[in-house]
Length: 168
Image (tube, rainbow, N blue to C red):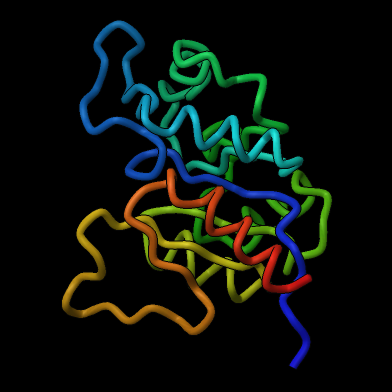
């Protein structure tokens, strides 16, 4: 069996993945989880393209939250469903994500907290997945083969480093 290709890009969902749980009234949305800042910097330093791929409503631009945390420059692209006119789990959303990632599907890792939108649907397009769940899987859920379950995005840099070492 051939080893999986190295990850060249990571597409992040926002809410429940890299956001804090509470809405910040000043920016009108959930701010970035400040414990996600360092892992985002590490991934960027590793040469991995970062993409924001989020279902949004018209008042959620995500940029104020990224700017407030000082990480907006780390992201190559932001795919926001309201401005695109297409949302997860529409297949077009994942095609647009692949275009933004500028890599083969197997070299893109989609990271999020929604099993269907952020894992099973991307897998249908050849994209790899990682599910973010601080408390693990829910009782009625099953993790697809080859998908990583992580409790926080802070686990990603080490996970991807281990993969790179083991597939070399």
